[in-house]
Image (cartoon, rainbow over all chains, first blue to last red):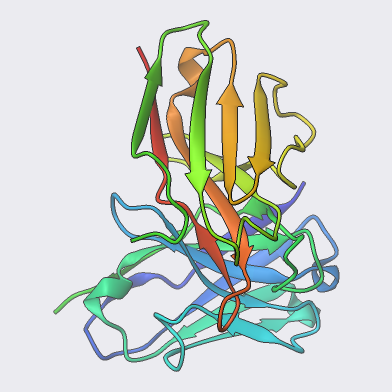
Length: 124
Length: 111
């Protein structure tokens, strides 16, 4: 059974940093691209970032480019999101998501498994 | 403002058929496949339709998807109370930097 378990969320002041983690199990982690997708309270889904299976390439939404960094450790079956210079508009539930493809920018890919999310609140 | 446009709400009575539209452009739906996700209240999204019209194993055949030009549609037949959820379309956008884009979501109410 595929499981994606996020952690690391919490309340943080604007301008500070936070690192999210996602522990994956039930599939061969290093065979697939992974993503972070977020959902602000009461709002829709927003893709944040993606990473290819071997970390060879990363992609970011314009809204987080230069502030967030996605990474993975295939030896630990883990995905990470380092979030710096946080803003109130980054407040959201952050989902760890598995892609069906090896590449995070494969137009024929899709998101076949989602974690339950970890909540990040940016407020003073 | 979402890149893909969906109606904010839709509704139908049990047993009816409803459709949800998703409008995009030549840089996303016009050249790439569309996927649909269902988000039941208080839960994480779940893959409902991939590659425009393909159902993953375990998804009811009451759900179907289609695509034409720069638009896509999700149809739900034999509407049931448990179908009440938010539905999102998504596609890869080949614009300036390349990115995954979602529709704003459609809240389906079963009357």
